[in-house]
Image (cartoon, rainbow, N blue to C red; front, top):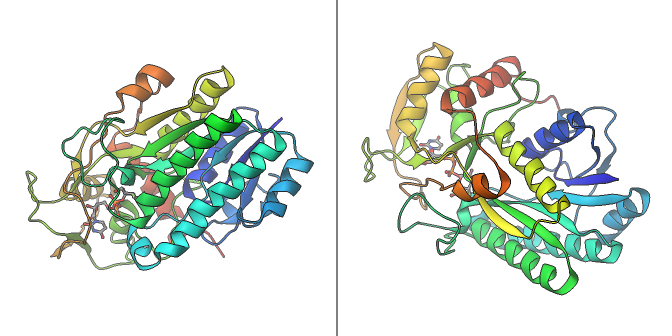
Length: 328
Ligand code: UFG
């Protein structure tokens, strides 16, 4: 019995592949390698390079492997890009989900754990954000995740699937041993961008606005370590395997850190100078996003362990050993 990991060669998916194999589970990975990296995976993992929107690709996997559950990480995930290319986001994300759910129904696969996002909430009325907060995504990326959640809900009602949707806040860090980590091209996320400065790959970090209504004027986010995040996926799988009902959970630490605090932490962790330039606000950035993760604690028994020091330290181990990321 295998777990199909869609998007398993990506940043978060590759950490899931490793964790599930460490638990002795059989996995099969599907990834288009448009943004994923084959080198992030063990050489011997069953791997299919292909596009999830092609039903024949999924049929071949389900015919060859006895798949009991799906972890779905395969999606385009850049907010800014989604504003430029909304239809590409709906094709890749929404249509991809449709084809996946249809294949699951065809092959009698009944469990799915899905990577959703805090982006489904948009600008919150208050923090911490609970799962009951209104869903008002402010960009096509968040909208696509909101629709993908709805598709699972309706497919569950009609076809007896069960799902867990995990709404990630800001994921960071790397495997504790620094062997796999984050490698987006071009890089777009705060922690790897900050660490490019002490690596000598960028002269300074630009803060996108310091005139927000926050204590130091910079945006506040809730950072969760990738290994903690993956633990929530394995708990979600067990929840579904034990007959638990479909549900939606926020994954964050319930603690907010400002951009300036993250830069200061990186200075401390790396012990290197980190010049800062204050730039303009990035359109669409909410001032403050902090999760309530109480529900994930109560229902799944999930407790994130890593604080921002450990998250940045693990990211630093990965980036300093692989300054140019994965070899192409
Ligand atoms: N930031 C900077 N300078 C940079 C890069 C980022 O100041 O060079 C700031 C951003 O303005 C933001 C914070 O650092 O305030 C974090 O930015 P990221 O791009 O790392 O992350 P986001 O909070 O924008 O995005 C995250 C996820 C998305 C998800 C979104 C939900 O990465 O997938 O949260 O709103 F959609």
